[in-house]
Length: 128
Image 1: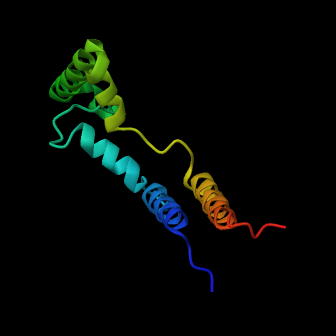
Image 2: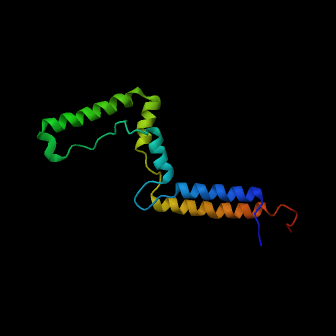
Image 3: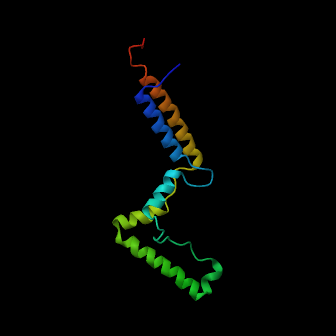
């Protein structure tokens, strides 16, 4: 029976943890991206750029003022640049690929990692 060495075991564990953390669910963000979104704004105090006003609310001055106020607050922080701008962007960041592509890439990573771990164990002079 094959028993992984220490290095092989750690390689497999780290790869498995990365795959679990990066694996996106069907209609949501991956655990890694949820953590990034949370870590840049743990108390949910940063503003988010609002969606455009719906067609019927354009005549309501209170709704327009609230919407414009939220945009001004966002723009003021965004104009500061640097870390403030990066935090605003990371708060709403999404996975770089669609979930299907991400799953395919992670499955390929799992196979490559398993192959590399298997080959690492073949360094004791048993190669032919």
